[in-house]
Image (cartoon, rainbow, N blue to C red; front, side, top):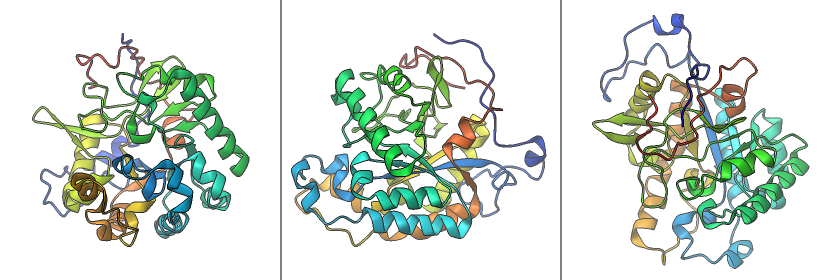
Length: 330
């Protein structure tokens, strides 16, 4: 059920909106006045190329330690690009990665970014029992906090796998000391998605916030505006236009994400993987870094915790029936 509450604190002021009219088409080259006044959330899911769900049927978990590790170098490339733009981000780091690359965790924190959890071993939440999930997020939190010496409050499920069959996960996360999740993708996809879920931040249970990945409702379709593979698939101007439209429609900061392997066109190829998996994974890898630089220049970016957990933030709506497809966010 849903209770009436004010929306989350927005990243813009009235003065921000007065400087010009909004972009009306993807081809417009003139930046919107709001772009540099509204901080959106930049997030990085820190995993290596062999962790991805698309290769789960191809690469045995037992082989992970035997494969070339490229995550440290690729994450450091992203950190360097962020530093060039003085942008801050939230890094959702696998416990598996933090255990093997603790210096990377320290570099993330030294550069002023938020450290958050991506789980321990890249296990889909909807394939775990509540007890197994509790063990996974508890272990991840301990590993990250030991490596970084900071409190970890944020979580993102591998493959956005908190959905209809795993909505119980929010209560477990709260009990384990997490404050927010960014694991719900309110659209339909063959590997993930929660069509009908709210498109703006909400409280699935009291005391806990879910910040969905950003989509834009266009002609009854939820169009992704959150990056990932779509950042490589869509022309850059379309991505920029979608982010503009997302703020106009949702009136809250957008959530954007990338993986370190997406800036690595020279990563080992998995020729035995299904064609669709290879197409999704390898498409336009050589374009990602330059597009990221443009994105960081066109918009203002911040950490998740500073956008959604600040003391002055207004409360988000309590929507406990968020998997009811008839329950729509605004």
